[in-house]
Image (cartoon, rainbow, N blue to C red):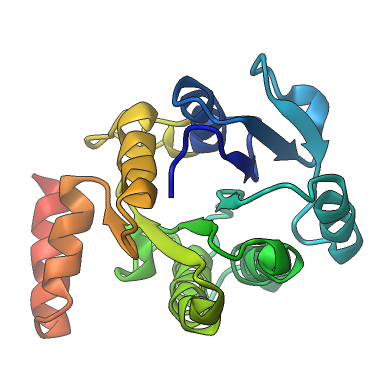
Length: 235
């Protein structure tokens, strides 16, 4: 799968990683980049094709798929972070997390899958797919579900040779993570790793040191992982 000349659709392209995906795809010679957002008038990347898309609205997803029938790579980047915990958090906020990260991503995949034979899907996941974090219970549950979705869709679409890649990262230097005081990776570094992963036909991309560390902890007893993570986050 080559980026050069490919027609690509990016969800949530009005800011953060989504905007960087649009920029980097153009830099790599993508033939067309559909940059989507609920409010496409906020997309400010010259050279893209702005497209309205609310991934939680099946009608909006169907309209986007009809408007972009030439897409061969879909980058599912759109996401939210409500800060809701599971026991004490607002249930509507928790549902929005799941509606966006799981059902929204699935909506897009189901709509575009028929045209992605010999194409690719990249789902932007997180180390929080694997590691719970107090203050992000809804996000953790939704991203864990999206990770499971990624793995199953990969099996379901293998017959049509669709690459399905999961991108894991720690903290990126975007407005969504503006509150976080720890080390953050530049968006262009994350995106470069993701696009390299697509071109190398990788099912999983660990984009930074934190994602590689958390993945390594998965083979440990959970008490070890959370003890080590607590130490790492406070030093």
